[in-house]
Amino acid sequence: MSLPNQNPLGITQFGSFGLSAAQKIALGIAQGSLGTTGNVYYCDPVNGLDTNDGTSPSTAVQTLAAGYALLTSGHNDVLVLIGNGASSGTARISSLFTWAKDAAHLVGICAPSALSQRARIAPPTTATAFANFFKVTGNGCLFSNISWFHGFTAGVAAEICMTITGTRNAFINCDFEGMGDTTGATDAGSRSILIQGGENYFGHCNIGLDTVQRTNANASVEIKGGSPRNIFENCTFPFYSSDGLQYAFLANAAASMDRFTLFKGCNFIAGVGTIIAAMFKLVAGAGGLVCLDNGCGMFNVTAVGDATTKAQMWVSGGTATNGVKGVVAT
Image (cartoon, rainbow, N blue to C red; front, side):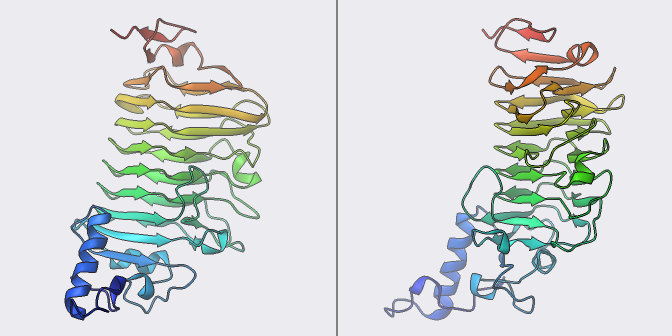
């Protein structure tokens, strides 16, 4: 197990501990605070160097790729992405980044703002556009306090910010800013999140942007491939629409879901631009149920969805309304 190579926390200065013991204590503190039994590594896009070992903030690597390479699949290793409070601290990627290791975690160190966290992943400002930005194929991974921004000076069609084919991953206080340029935001094939895996959890996340105007029937989230039991809790879905045709959630093929997709305490906000016509779009036989608890809110939105969509949705805590099936809490 790697150990920090500096005097940690100043605990050797009074002679109570030797350097080796102090390093072990500091490593234990770092692992305990992040809830892991694996190693903790650091990525600092401003001050790091990829020739460093990444085992402490002062020996952080610089690039996300170098930090990811340090992680061992299945070991609950953690990569800490260090923000500097500004966009200049962004980790830059110039092509699709695939997170394929199981039980390998990414945690951002920055203010835990609900939107646009400064522990951030984005393309270089001069990057040639690429349609698929970040893909999670690993299982059982935690992503916390991270922002992904997918946008270019000149974008491409069918931009997808985050694709998830893995299972049982958790995204806590994360921000998925897809369709960050005009080309992506006006293409019907663009998504902030594409889900093709089951039992993933999104807690207190922001999904989408309201700074670039969207046109045509693109979606903040699309689900495919019979993905079961995905949960969104206390998430925000912002919109800036020019025509009202966008969706928060799309199941565009038969058997896209399995069992259920749950939205709990989520808010769908078209705070600027055209009123959104429908938040959800489910084709006939989309598979499973879309379940809304009565803590969900829709603002500047005309309807939950069309008749086919509403026939596959349930809302808890009240009687049926607007064609959506209702169950009274007892």
